[in-house]
Image 1 (tube, rainbow, N blue to C red):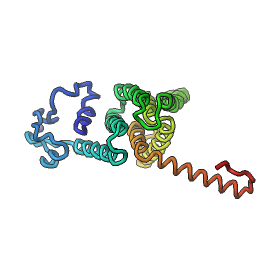
Image 2: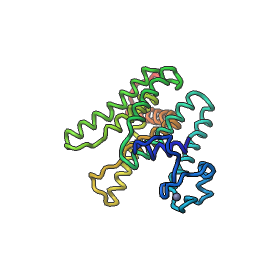
Image 3: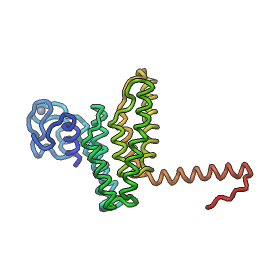
Image 4: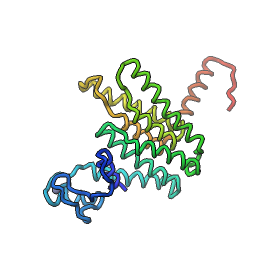
Length: 260
Ligand SMILES: [Zn+2]
């Protein structure tokens, strides 16, 4: 699966077929032999070089294979083999693909975001994701679309230039169809936080403030984070805010008894 994701990341932006031709060396074009195409192992065995021309093969290939394997293992350990684990594996795989395509090309393919949105609604309708129904899924998609579309329109009106691509809007709508509205808020919060940090680092290192950066990697990273620890983080935040308000109420001597 990780090897296939590598092919998708390479060929989808070029609008090439995902199945033909078989993998080739990017330098000499020689087809890669079956025994040289074993995920991770072949890269290590060949020391990251083509057997035919000795050209360097990007470390991105074994990296994505390893990340995909780790995501699958983590989902298995978290929930065993269930329809939900399968759904979230496909979701995480889509996140890996979007992360790299947006990183390299600054585009988020509609074929992933829009088809993903439809799949999210379908798997929620058949209740393969615990706690999700078709209505929560649609509400999540709508929240995801509007929460980015409105600021994108306002920015464009005020600054007269595109500040946020529609690809990001469609991507967050797709995430909402799998994760629901709470997931959308979580993803927006963490992607904005990490995106701002990255932008700040860029500015400190002398980048121009109008330099565009892809937002997809931050959105996809946050979505994967939500899949694994989202409910824990939200429980913890709820606990913290409750303590804060309880402290506030006690300090103010307010005679309100909280209904808990
Ligand atoms: Zn070669």
